[in-house]
Structures are given as structure tokens and as C-alpha cells.
Length: 339
Image (tube, rainbow, N blue to C red; front, top):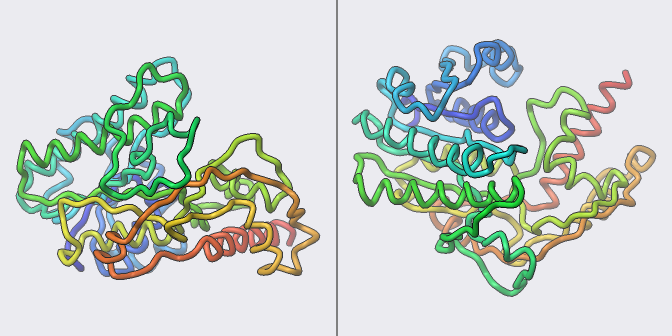
């Protein structure tokens, strides 16, 4: 599909922007979906975009759940990379604002794609949390090995917090997409990608504070001297690999109507506190800046990505590499602020 037109949603986000860059570098023409006009101005002037503006166009779709909104922007598109999805927001209605919102957007994209015969493949960002029931966290089986064949097919309701609803939304959206393929038999093939905890540098971060947001702030805790009172699943994947997998999934050599888990250091996973040793070794001159006395407990979980590695024909970058790249960017941003 190289040099052909693809549509990408979620390009203003952490993974989506990186995916857009890799798609452009691979030679694709990209039609990038944004929700607000001002996002185009910010993204167009980004240094990583400058060499590719002739192959990049932005289209505004304020509400991705309106399937008709996609019709004008899918003309001549051969592939869709759908990365936009509702997050674990705080709300009074978890079912409506998180679960049904995610399912609605998934169905919206698939219905629109079916109306356009030029589309041959749709790649969707799901999540490895779809493999694991939320209640497993309360009594984890550290010897169970999860693969792309697993799915949390019956999330327990009612939802008591936004994260529980988010886990359910990803699982139910994944199930909805597979049901669509089985029942509607569209002309395109579907691929669901299931990344674990995504870390690594953020090319949209403009200062150290903006880099330390969301999950990145949590995993940087051991390095920055922060002691977390929560635990995180011990599975991770480099953001570059997640973006690369989305673009590579457009290639017909990767089997379609399939699902692939994206994760490194398998099957045993990682320990988040190992970041201290990794960074002490990688950046010995930064000890005055990095306390290296924080902690983040790990919930052990085993993931088998052999199906993914066979299909894509490359290996995932290690936790060591991801942490070095993330902390390296953090130190560069700090240095820039001090000049």
C-alpha cells in the first residue's frame, strides 16, 4: 500500500502522531483526522512533519461516532489506521461516556469503511487489557500466559470506576469489531492491535512537564524519586514499535482478519523498579538530576507474542531501550529549559 492514500485517526495523540510520521516516512499519502481546526496548525509546523507536507492533509471530524461524517473523507482511501478512542475519563455515567462511546466509534468507522469499496484493510488500536478480566487484578495468577486468543468476553457490571469501565470498553469494542466482520463480511480485512503499557519518548512534548503525563509519569516514578501507592502490570512496549506495527499491518504480507499483541521482554515481562538500575547505568552523569530512589510495584503477568513476531517478522525493543529513550528525552528537555 506504500504511496497510496491512508486515513489515520488520533494523530494529535502520543501514539497517533508517531504513527502518522512513520506512515509518511514509509511513503504513504496521509489523510489525518483531527477534531478541531487549530490542531492542524500546531501539527503542520512540527519539525518532523516539514519534509512531508505535500503528502499530508488534515480533515476535521468533531464527532467520530457519526458514521456519515466519514463518507466525504474516505474517497480513494485504501487503508484506515484507527487510533482514536475514549479514555478513562471521570464521569457520572461510565456505561454511556466510556463503554458505549468506544463501541460507537468502532462501529462508526467500520460501517463507513464498508461503504467505500476502495478500502482493503482497517487497523484498529485495541489493548492488551482486553486479554485480562479486571477482577484478575485482585487475585492475579502470575503463571497464566495470555495470548491474542484470550478476551475478557463478559465484563462484570456495574462499573465502579473509570478504569474498570475503560477495560470493559476495550474488550467490548474488540468483540464488536470481530462481530462486524463475521456478520457483515465487508470487502476489507480487519486487524486489531493489542499493545501493553506504551512508553518511550513523546514527540509532541515541548517541555519536561508535558512529557510527565499519564502513564509516563507513573513509570518515571522510580527514576524521579516518587513512591507510588499503586501497582502496574509488568508488561510494556516501545511507542515506536506500536506505531511501526500499525503501519506494517497495512501490508498484505501480514495476515488479515487477525489480532496481534504488542509487547516486549516476553513471556515473563518486566519489573518497573528495574528502571533505576537501567538509568543509573545509562546516564551516570545525571545523578544530580535523577534521585533514583522511587518505587512502582509490579503485577506480574505473562504475555506470549510469538504470533505477532511471526506475522510482522521483527522483534520488539526492550524495556531497557524504552526507558533509556524516555529518560533521554526528559533530560534533553530539562537541559533546554535551563539554557
